[in-house]
Length: 315
View 1 (tube, rainbow, N blue to C red):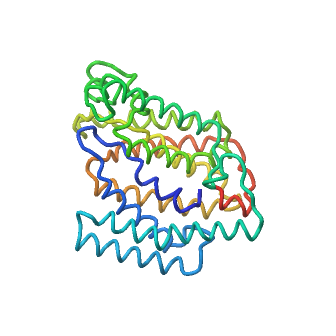
View 2: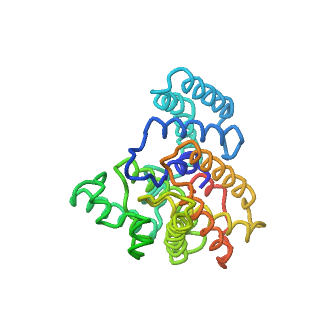
View 3: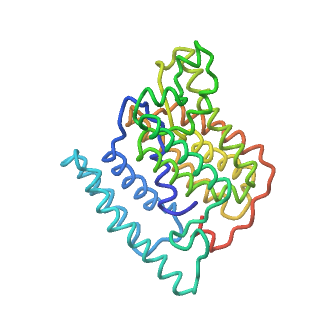
């Protein structure tokens, strides 16, 4: 959970309205800024020598790219980000593995990522539904998304199609949308599943997603939001973050709990900042999932598993 890639991609697990395409340039720019800010704040441990200085260079370069070359700012920032942060981090992990004769096995042999059973099952279901979208008319086809169960608040409020509160969580608008959502789930989910167990993780994931949908519908019904059509698993993923917060607060005296809480609060602030500057992203859904997950995390009874130094690299 404390890997740079794991936390950065959370910012892009969005729930866009299907009328607007996702802007990869914007996503790449925010990735570079968010992860660099976290490194500067020393949210990730351990860090390679000079990581904060390189992260500061990425931040400055990203700002200059935004001011001087906005149409390609994300791509320029991504190049600098990869050269100064991603590649050195990868080489450092390789050096660490060679020095301590660490031999990853199974699912983490190639990428340093462990896949837990429920997370793997959720990824398979989401991919299967995405394939169904493609076969049914296309993942960016408004009619297809509506027929398969997007969160159409008008249909929920006036036609009582409450099943959309759940089905919309497994639909995605285009390959970029599902990629970032599932990658964020893969990087953030297994550590929590190992802490609270597969059944409770599945409950927290699904209930948080439904809570995010209900939040959007209620705000629409109260006329605080305009009617919208939403798809995506970001409410569930924000629920995973919220569950982490509640769980770590409940077990705040456990090893690394305070450090992880600090990191997660930074993540939430960055996510909110991204929501504010990206109108097509549903902040209401994100906050609804986050709050629902937080309440569930406070109720989780399982004691945290003691963390070893190696788990810092694998979570």
